Length: 89
Image 1 (tube, helix red, strand yellow):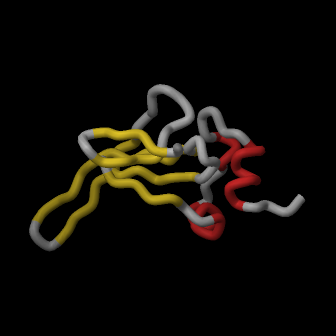
Image 2 (image 1 turned 60 degrees about the vertical axis):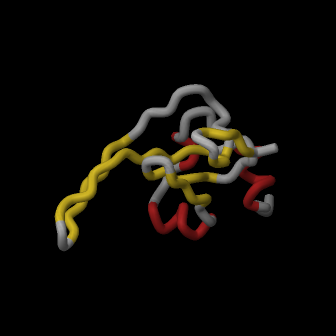
């Protein structure tokens, strides 16, 4: 229910159309790695980081550690977030 297919793989469905991608670049022993990343809230309420075509859901601790202001994410939904992360009120 929370996945959509792209190039034969399953990815978390994005709650909004269109994403603004940010670029990353780093050096490694045999060259350089460059790509695009995005941080978004999926329709299941979880926060994901996407690097190229790879993605991972973030824990609330990782969100804190990375200093992500979830309230500034496009189309952020607090109710979905609370439900996904079981935030006590």
